[in-house]
Length: 54
Image 1 (spheres, rainbow, N blue to C red):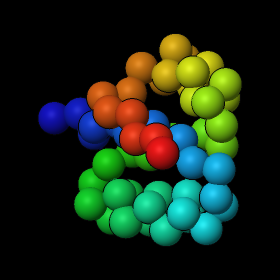
Image 2: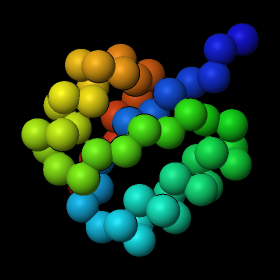
Image 3: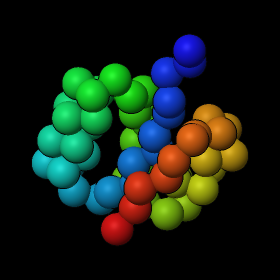
Image 4: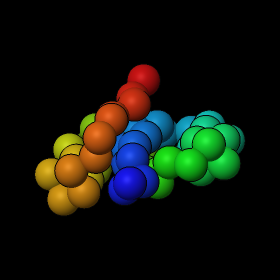
């Protein structure tokens, strides 16, 4: 079974770190972006299973 990939778009480094650690511990592969433009680029490149953004 392949590891599900989550793209987390968040400008706060603290929230990126916290959510990244929790999601990784739960077995997800997490990729990060710090703004919408970078998030859109990462979404096209990484093809995540889920995108979380604020």
